[in-house]
Image (cartoon, rainbow, N blue to C red; front, side, top):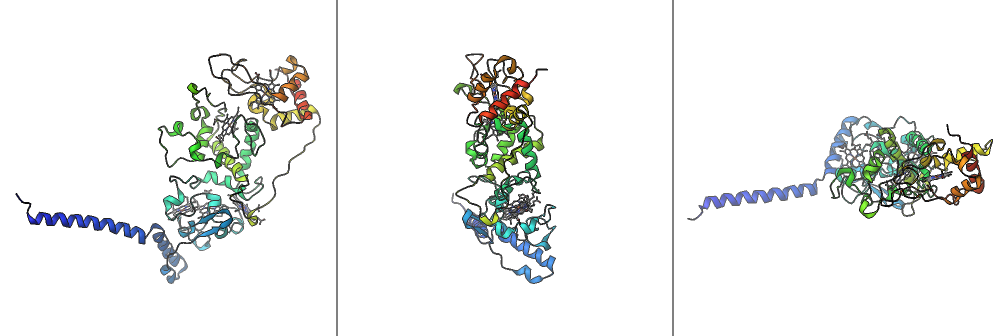
Length: 406
Ligand code: HEC
Ligand code: HEC
Ligand code: HEC
Ligand code: HEC
Ligand code: HEC
């Protein structure tokens, strides 16, 4: 039986309609991309706010801020067109002017049309769709930072963020960092110890250098993976994120779980970003006119005694990170022979001569294993001879001898 002519006719009509629709949508996206509509809506609002009707008929155009030295082209203002227009204050984003953060002079001191946006916010400056500009998308490592993290980028220009309004959380985090003695395990700009990684490099790494399996399960790369997400989760529970791999002889991370509050986790993560921002980047130098202030000077306090100096050094160089406050109790160190913890130091005065103590500090020591079939302990006593002068080692020994078990 032959198909009736009218059915062929219908099929033909339906398929041409389908193809036509597809082509139409493609054409529309090409001729009228997202940013054009955003700018048309902006222009209409601007006309309303200013009472100048002609503004509504301005020709939409891609607007950009070009920082050749930093290889940055920020087109954010194509959509965020009212960012430096005080008349647009209080309008919803992306139409509103930039918040002043309650800091007098913030807007005037940071001319956005010169600095662009990604220097503080991250995001993909050259993109003109919201999804690609804000991220997260594949192959763009720096999507928009959440607001808790933005203070970590101020150090890109501000050589000293101590006391800087708007960056109070960084100063607070720095205190916590010193109190915990993180520097006893981590280098920051080459100062500290390399039991763990250099922290000024963390935010320069690609997400591919981090293992996200223990964060969201699964194996595949996900486009919403970010370094700050990994670092936050790692602070929340280091052993969950880095459980090691026994078959390859890799122990779980020795980094202590500090039981940090959510606020402390965000603060410390922003501080790690701040360390990265402080690094000079040869390939993306900051224009001289953007640089503010001078790095904080090294302090040289005067001490009443060597014991007092030793106590300060114990904190400053991060002995406290492994041996605890006043050397009263060490962090967990799986499979270490003398118990599963880094030793307390309150007994060294009775167990060793001063010279022996100085020798241990100078040269460091690898602990033995309590169970020969288990993995080696992940924490060792680093050698400090490259980091401390002989006088400083002497003061530390005097301090340790002064400690009393109680
Ligand atoms: C295609 C238009 C478009 C572009 C380009 C664009 N944005 Fe947005 N942006 C929006 C819209 C729309 C909003 C309103 C909130 C929303 O829908 O997420 C917004 C909101 C924001 C917010 C408020 C916080 C948030 O996520 O809601 C920030 C910050 C921001 N944008 C920064 C940027 C930066 C930085 C760039 C450039 C890298 C940029 N935007 C480029 C459209 C855009
Ligand atoms: C000097 C650093 C700096 C620059 C440059 C900068 N911003 Fe911001 N921006 C901030 C900070 C800090 C905040 C406050 C974040 C918070 O507390 O939520 C903010 C907030 C915003 C918000 C409001 C977010 C919200 O949730 O209300 C938008 C939108 C925004 N910025 C867009 C931009 C755009 C677009 C540019 C470029 C034209 C830009 N910013 C340039 C530092 C900066
Ligand atoms: C692109 C470089 C740049 C970035 C990034 C930047 N600033 Fe600034 N900031 C400046 C310059 C330049 C001045 C003006 C200094 C002057 O006039 O002496 C300034 C001035 C200020 C001032 C006025 C008081 C002072 O110390 O001079 C504050 C407050 C401030 N910035 C806060 C911030 C905060 C908070 C951030 C991070 C969210 C930030 N800035 C990021 C360049 C920058
Ligand atoms: C006992 C030594 C030790 C102490 C103390 C310690 N860490 Fe770690 N940390 C490590 C080791 C080892 C790693 C690498 C394995 C891992 O990722 O857990 C690490 C990883 C990290 C990472 C991931 C860095 C990267 O680039 O992969 C960050 C961030 C970090 N530590 C921050 C801190 C901060 C902040 C403190 C103080 C509050 C601290 N750590 C205290 C040993 C330590
Ligand atoms: C990365 C962790 C770590 C840091 C930081 C650290 N230690 Fe140690 N320390 C250890 C470990 C582990 C041992 C045990 C070594 C062993 O069993 O052979 C140890 C042992 C010692 C001992 C010998 C204790 C004994 O009872 O035998 C002294 C003394 C000592 N450390 C002093 C210091 C001083 C002073 C500092 C700071 C300058 C410091 N440590 C920083 C991990 C650390």
